[in-house]
Image 1 (cartoon, helix red, strand yellow):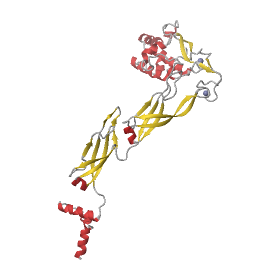
Image 2 (cartoon, rainbow, N blue to C red):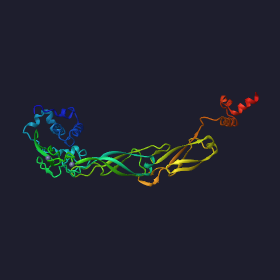
Image 3 (cartoon, rainbow, N blue to C red):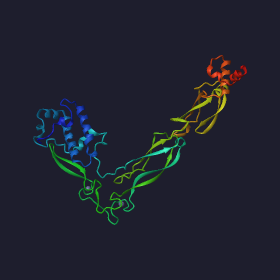
Length: 376
Ligand SMILES: [Zn+2]
Ligand SMILES: [Zn+2]
């Protein structure tokens, strides 16, 4: 008792700390030290108890006052004075509640759901849009063939753990300031399973499981998008103590398309047309996820003109009858290099419109060259 730490120091708060500050400090420590999260560490368990004890005193105005006045001595007289504090579990409900599912401790050998497996699936642009059947491989633990999953050498069988009598956990009494506290810890002998294997299966070393590369068929729904994930229920790691299997969480990666861009359920496309097509009008072929469609470009179309192809977008993930749209932006392309003849025609156009154009380049025009020759 002599080296008992100061309760404020234990919680890491100052002596003027408010009730909520104390509660917050304890919650943080409890999250760090809670036995359910730190299996088999006596030291951590001790820290947890120390913090719990400090909180028990400092969260109660009367007890806190006594402690402030007399220190630890306030509670040592007539040891066990705080009857009703026999099971620390009782107070978990109010402080943990949401954290630990009501605060009750899980039985060590209770059924537990198996672990989830994270996997990745790569899809082509169109596969994500219209859905596809895919096969993927995941590494998952399957029952060992040799021992039928028991972990025991064939011909032998599991036995009930003698240390915990099959309970998976052991209760032990501990003397504390508040009298005898009964605590529970996972049985070290059997690791919480309640059973022991005398002779281990040599194939799986007693685990009863073997990692296997397993093929899974996956139905990819139409409309899924890059960055979304799919849950394949019950395809993950086996449960513990008869619990259900975990899931496979599939992270979806979609390859971008060369010219179409998907944003949610809509598709965006930039349609390049020439000056002449924009000025005179034309019928163009527009690529969509359903194949090419023809579209009438009106004479005098400006660059950046937008039009919508209704229903040419992505099916909705939960209702494939509904589809997004495709948005097309017209981009009138300025020619980057001109043949002599093209240049001459542009010059004629410019002259008709009374526009000034680069004279230096004008001289290179074929008609001017002919004119130059004739003039010589
Ligand atoms: Zn045991
Ligand atoms: Zn085995």
